[in-house]
Length: 228
Image (cartoon, rainbow, N blue to C red):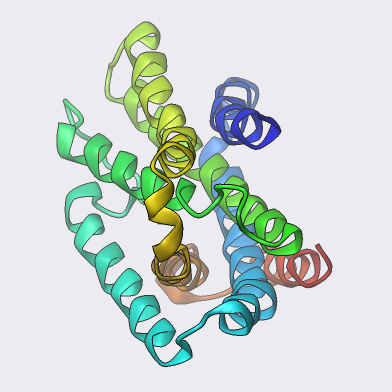
């Protein structure tokens, strides 16, 4: 239950962040994205990947599924237009494809958190998802509000997005046959997060140049990711 609460509340924390940092949110979001990207990368390379290769029964296939996750994220971003790594889009209306893409993304990420993982792996994946969901939710909510969507409707869309990861977790608990493919699904999620983390780091800076603040954010994210 605590996992579901954390997944759900991490998205709605975006509401408070957007309201508090309304005037300077874009710069703050970029730094938060940079930190989260570095955190994700450190978490993936030092915790999630070693753990999945350690517990997988068929190590030869794990790398293939990581690559599939990486490629699947590219496909999702064709519809989400890069919101996962902080791209702002000024539009009169938000295409429903963006919300659907982000919802599929979140649903898949929630599936491996079924409680059948080792505690260390579960906590590492949960931390990675939460650190990623917060800035994505901030960007999504900001885009809704800046494009004239009413707060009531914007919060409703955010509610749908917030429910997806817990729904993925719930689905894996109800349909226990999914457990047999937990390592493969976990590898796909790792591939998705790997794509997002590397893209965030390189695209969160203007003209791909790293300022002192961005370098500090990256270093802090790596340190926290290594020791979390």
